[in-house]
Length: 264
Image 1: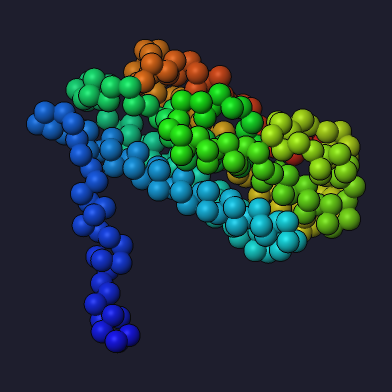
Image 2 (image 1 turned 90 degrees about the horizontal axis):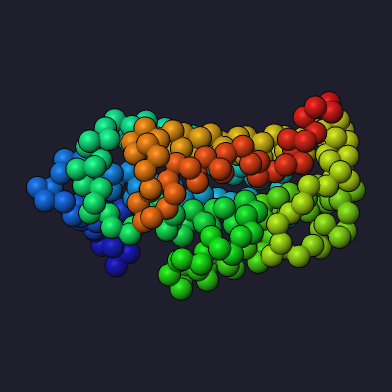
C-alpha cells in the first residue's frame, strides 16, 4: 500500500500546482496585460510572509532554548527572505503608471494595508498598535492580537542574553508584552559587554541588525515604488499611500542595537 501511495506522488500533486495556478483571477476586461503580474507578485509576497512567520516563531523558540547556532541559521534565512521581498519590487517597477492605472479601478477597497500576515510579521517584530488590526476580518484580527499579546523576537533575544549571564533587568524580562518595548540604557550597557565578551551572542545581535536593516530597506523601496507608480495620490482602499509609507521609514525595530553603535 505504501509503495502505491509513493508511486502516485508527483511534483504536481505534492505542490498542488493545478490549484496554485488557478488562483490568479484578473478582474479587468481583456484582461489588462499587467494585472496578472500584479496578482502574482502580491500572492508571492503572502507566501513569503507565511514563511517569515514560520521562521520567526522557530527562531524565538531557538533563542529561548539557548540554541545559538540554530537561531543564527534561522535569522540568516529571515534576512535572505527579506532580500527577496526587496528584489520583487524591481519586477513591480517594470509596470508603468499608465499600465497600473489600466486596472487600478478594479481593486476597489482592497489594499496592501489589509495584509493580515504582514501585520503578524510586524507583531512578532514588536509592533503593539491595536489600530493596525482593527480593519481586519475577525479571524485575522484574532491572530494578530494574539501575537501582540505575546513576546516579540526581541523579548526572546533578551531572554537568550540573560541566559548567557548578561544582566537584563527582571522588570524588562517580565514586562507587559501587550505594550511597546521602550529602549533601555541598562540593556544597552549589557549589550556592550556582550559584544566585547561573547562572540556567539554578538553574532545573534548582528543577525538582528541585519533583519532590522532589511525591513527598513523593504519599506524604503516600497515607498519609492508607490511614489513612482501613483505619485502622491490616495492609495488603494483609501489609504494615504506614499505619505503614510514614508512616515514608517527609519524607525528601527531594535533601537537598543542601533543606539550602542556609536559606543564601541
